[in-house]
Length: 328
Figure 1: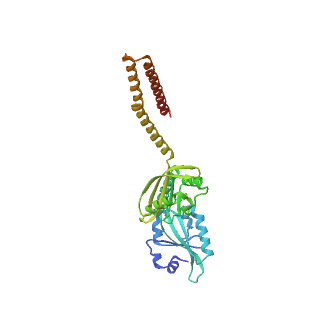
Figure 2: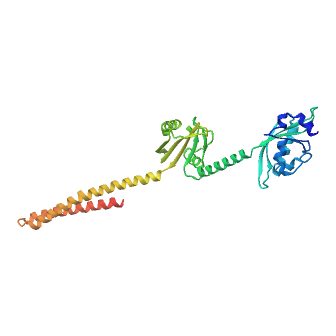
Figure 3: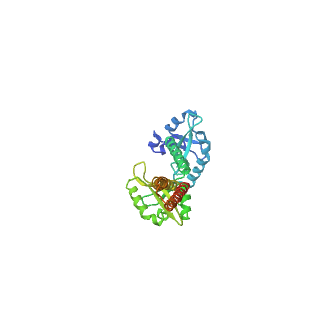
């Protein structure tokens, strides 16, 4: 078929399109027709396309995929098949991404005459998709490298996504793996149900929640720092909330030790300022009494010495208590 005969069988808006490239190949894969937009886009190839094989304007890596789609068109003459194909560009090291729809082309009598291909450039959208995937991969790498457990949960409490640490911690506590689509209620400890739903309802109303909570499971317990953050899509529509938790048991234990040490120091200070001082005052008083009082009988001096010895023993006990508290 001539190009004119083919063009007469095609809608005029396709032949004259400034958006869509239109190509018809014969059943052997040679170009039978290309519209002006296709000629303009690939003029740099310096090829008179008519009669040439379709491979002259396609990335070598996509040839097999295109042939597969052609076979599907022949086997299903009333269907349209989409395909993304890389096309050459002026820079030898680059290529254009294009999206095409292939279908069987029929002559005026309805007999198969070739393959109709209608396509447009999607290079920019492919670049955006590539950037998004790169950003997603970076975000995923960050989430997977953290020691925090992170989950994204829908408004109906279904699990949308989670990181590796969340999977590890959840299976350790509940004995079963996290799964996308599972309900979050299967992964909340019974004692935490009421607090969890109260806090997350606030998050679903747009509030940021930060708290510290001690959880108990079996004979063990742990302190967690928890964040519930509302999650929105690019159109600012609420899609759920993020749940992140950090194990702060060690930090809490250290803080408790500091409090206990502070209490011991306060007690030691009180003993030093009261108990020790009391004994010292008594000892000094008895010493002066024995030394300076000339009228004391031998029996009275002996009684005062016994009292002095008792004060010294009590002072020794108090000093041992202070040393013991300091060591512990």
